[in-house]
Figure 1: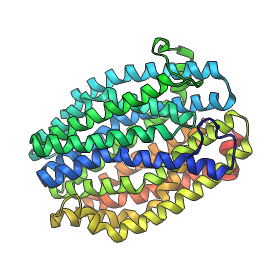
Figure 2 (figure 1 turned 180 degrees about the horizontal axis):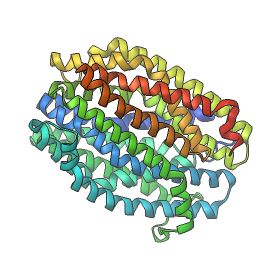
Figure 3 (figure 1 turned 90 degrees about the vertical axis):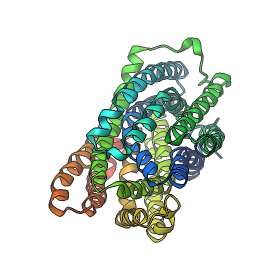
Length: 445
């Protein structure tokens, strides 16, 4: 694994990106285990009804968490720039302002998540049969917002300076704890979906605490001091300038996905469970690609901070090629193994049918999705977060929602819901390709 004392402005490009992305991949793998463990245990022990309730919560969680994660991405870009430039005083100011922002956001997210859960679940036409369990799961999840938000804040700081190793260790620990608590609370104590949510909340608090301890104990330039946590308003404006577009982008996409979820819900509990199981599989399958795109943002940020544009461009080209090739390979595997993969979550034949149909509509187009994510990551690292925000807002929200409003009533088929993703991935990829011609993203930095 990469030595975190060496910035990404030095060393062989493909090695620096790959060995930074590898622990990110393993860390994201364990992160994905949080919700997947809930789904596996709930689906197998409590049945399709409970699995549908947990699955329906995913997009609402991402809508609220995604906005805050976007802000933490902006903070990571700022911190990486100052780290790459060797400007320790400004990096310290950015780190402590980011921590203050996270604490304030935790309070807001708890209030919003707990208060809005029932209303939004009704907006997306969650069936009454699963409404009570869905509300319970979501509200308990958001009571643990402090762990969710601060974990992402602290990991963002560590990744900005090139440390993807320690977050991996902490996620391994907390993921094992999550699985154990899931089994205890659901199988032993019979707490139902509430037990799954409580297990996730405790595990996320644990991972946040371990990350914070690392930042408090280190003697490196990025050390965190509790006494120094406060808002620096000029720095906060800079963080928001870089992070707000990503946060808005995440929330808008999540809102569009809530509309998609509402259309899935209209086809009943079996469709909800099958599509929800597929979503977990897609999440796992896309982890290598997500990890590479995260590495690309840090790589581009640090090298542009060090004013090495040629190195930034070479790394971007390698990252795009690697993500697209990996995504294509993953897509083929998901397409072939879809029945067996869906059955691990729920062996009900109708659930498997819905999940397999969704998988075999989307999987072979994963390369388009990877290209869009890679270009968005590069542009964010270059400080041009407005471009991916506008592209994804247009195609992954406006076009996606408009397509569903027209196609679903006309066809009365869930296939229209399945096809909305590949079609909008194609549109966003074509637009990113046009925007990036000739390295325009770097020249305009």
